[in-house]
Amino acid sequence: MADERQQRAHARLPIEIKVEYRRLNAFIADFTRDLSGGGLFVRTGHPLPVGTECLFTLELPNLPEPLSLRGIVRRIVGTPAEGSEEVPGMGVELLFDDDDERRALRTVVDDLMVSHLGEALYRRLVAGRG
Image (cartoon, rainbow, N blue to C red; front, side, top):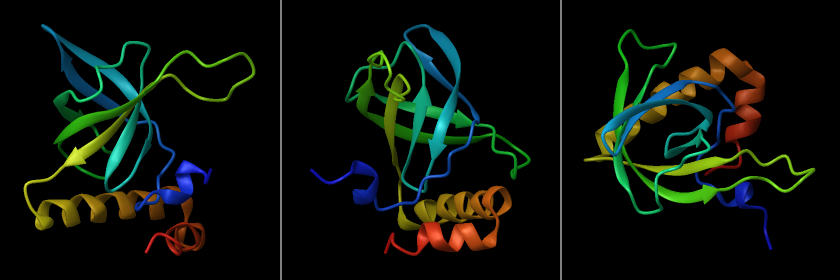
């Protein structure tokens, strides 16, 4: 079976960003493990059910205001087995109203990648994503 990371259409930036979302009648604040132009992984011991659509608000360091994005929970990672490096949480696919919105987020994520990883590493990361 091919490694899931090799099948992704978007390079992922391993970055911890505060993310807020609503769960039942409460607002939750957690942190991302990674972010891409198409999704994010939220570290949490209490993920939303798969298929849940939600508004996620991110405090990105390169933007003056928090960014709110619609997303849908696509996968849940539970408590890892002993010795596993997997982080509990939920994988979220971001939903866009149009291609302009999708491109705008990709630009923000690409700028973050360059600032955190440097131009050379960024180029190597995105070279294979097509």
